[in-house]
Length: 72
Image 1 (cartoon, one colour):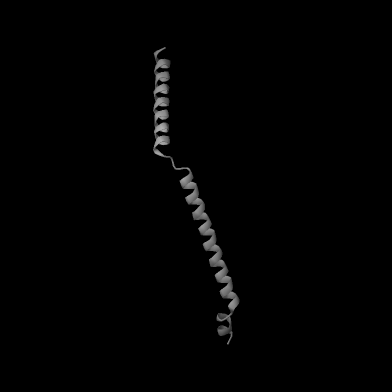
Image 2 (cartoon, rainbow, N blue to C red; image 1 turned 180 degrees about the horizontal axis):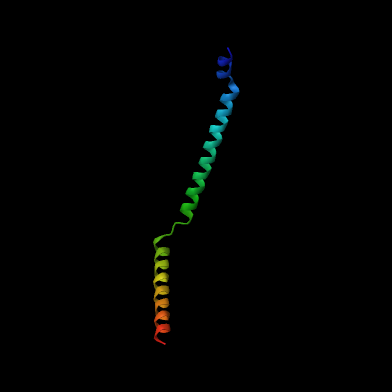
């Protein structure tokens, strides 16, 4: 009789349901936060172009400085 009473104990079902719902809510919040942050920091084509141009200019300037230091 003890085995049957332990299996039909509603508090264990409530505890499992509470744990499952809590886990699902936390996962939903984490996923929403990830989506919000990934869209917020995504660059459009103009911003990407500006970054690439700045990187190219910076590389060109650093190369010129390197060459001028080695020439002297």
